[in-house]
Image (cartoon, rainbow, N blue to C red; front, side):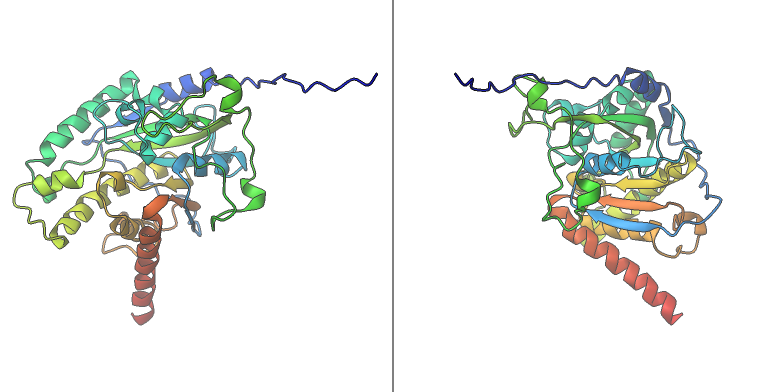
Length: 342
């Protein structure tokens, strides 16, 4: 009598103890108040910076970079700073994880849900950071753009990624797909470990699968919501004036974040749609990034970060991708044209 083979139902669980790394991340969290001057630390050697544009979210890009060995320079890393991958996070809530814990599907909430960043944001070091954000928001409604306060910053080293983002499947139809770099499987799946699987409270879709740990250093700061700019005294909402104000206030904030990355030794950056969920136009953001990272300095060399980083990956998913990329490339083209004619 021939026996019918019975399918195996055994599931092999891989256990990753991330507790030590999370504690190290929390203890290394640093608050930069608005009153603290952050020196622009130029590297010992200028880098021929490479730029990439990705349609994936920030954690998806950071995971690919880390698991494929990018930016792990053992001469500059340690247990408290295990990677030189820097990620820019947008913090618009008035309390730690407010959007992510409420089920928000914004791109910045995805970063909080897929990593241990919430532990850093809930630490005692982060309390004055959120207090400063609240004060910042109150001042924004009553001050002209030229008097807006300098943004406070929170730096969280060695943040652990523990899930894959929903978009972390690296669809071959995406134009930034590379079969050799992107075919990194997760282990094990959320379905294997959770019954029922965790779901996004807003769209009821299953959240990302658990994955092998990956780490990143995160700079968190708050953007200026465009609705607050419109409510500011003396603002005429004719489009041009509002865009100028958004640009005037957003650019110094991003520059301050870049100064922190440079000072902490991060050489590969993942820069997302900072403030776009709050109303910052993607084309203005693309121009700002180009001027800070790829164009000649405008008068003062301390306003330029050209050549200070080895690699920049712009994580610009969804509707923001095309206008962002077009604006960035056009601004770089304009700069090159000026150089050629001068």
